[in-house]
Length: 294
Picture (tube, rainbow, N blue to C red):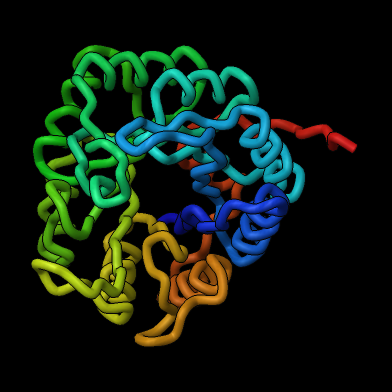
């Protein structure tokens, strides 16, 4: 079984005068703890309720450059699929990125936050995948259910995705993108994937005051990621997915959660991938050398 690629998810740094510096520091700490991929939501322009988000290109570029400088070789992944495709393309053109997240199905999780349901036409998937192919960006395709896997096959058939495919198996919480947070669901979902697909698991364990289906506990979350490690997949972790390190105790940082997964993988006999190893596994180009801005 090959090395385990750990993705550190968005550090959830609130808006403020030191937001850029704090995001970079959080990313650097997660990198030191064992994360090869740094998933970032970055910084957005002010938006009115009901509008899609648009990146603040200048400040988001500053974050990415700072992460590259502090995390040599790390894979920079731009997430936040509720952002407009126009601003995602503009950011990629401005600074260059390694990975771009793409949700291959509707997602209404954000309706409670005043953000529209993430509805993308199949033509938009095709356009963004084609952009990534043209610019040597690896799409991280998010598969929430079987319909999203069908869209993955569609993009392959259209010639805009090439192997190795990097698939995020998402076990989501409330909303139309919900799926059971079970090992059986993990097995079902990975059996849908095409030959040449590599996958990692994202499971959400958020304590919620109101819910339809009982939320996943931190212990259940740990078991799910452990199962992914043993199945030969990879994992994503951090406060975005799991605010608590254990029931009732909030995680101090993404780094704390990444370190826990790295230690667990080591105990299970699976080494943690370095950024260079992760790039080789994923077929990514060597890391760009970032010139310090000061």
